[in-house]
Length: 361
Image 1: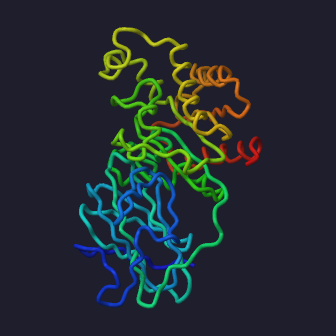
Image 2: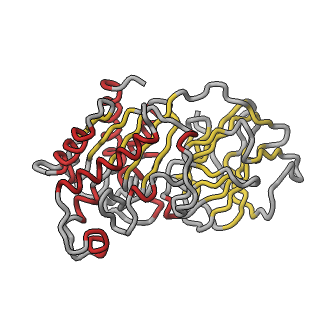
Image 3: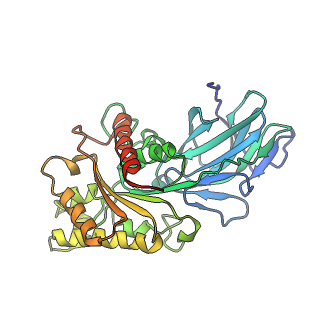
């Protein structure tokens, strides 16, 4: 059943605990809330969300639900998912605000999830908690997810411009939707906990900015190298890496500022690229000794016919000599720009089939 989802906002200067209308406040540290992704829980009053695809879900009895959020930029968009069915768009404003997510729900048990569509470059969001209707209560979901999958990638994995129907790859964050990326689709297919470590423009040897995947892969807060992720918190059954699309472009742009920053006056050799990729996989393997790792490439022009980058990836995987590291080359989609919704689904279909055929987890 599709519910009418009403998204409004009310300025909130302090956390609501009970409220004038006897609503029930469920704080961000409630044991029954379900988080996904790398989330910072260190502050007693809120949890902080940075990365694409990070989310928080509540199961509750009640007829209405709101969330108290403090976005530091007002550039972030979230998906609101009610009862695993209805999805609506929520744009945050800067500052601490209470957002009504759904109203006039039928009596009974419901669930609501807020899912970060946008990249960490759009800023972070402090989540203080949910507010549910008078007489409502939070419910424990006893059907816990038994699988976990983690992705490392660039704009393809972010879902950059996935909803730009013009095909112009417009940079407005409203067109980015990680929920419709192949990574999130794959995680939902396997009912797996989902972590997405990605940024548009990032690479293994060079990026469009002076940050590499090896600079951020181990961060809790992607903008703070002092706030590192505790890898013992979650040991995913599968890690998927889809990188080097940006390397493939920038390695041919000697006049670009990050080329000079990383390579000076030299030209990076194939061996240098292979070794850089190998070293990144070794960093992940040191944290996840038993995890299956899928080294994926595609579906943009890095995998077009006669591209040398498939060979680079295959050489790197061979060099690792690790039977639990796999290679997956997805054919070029043969259209301009970033993958649209249909092309992201195609990517997901290939990945899902590959996992089903090759990995027992």
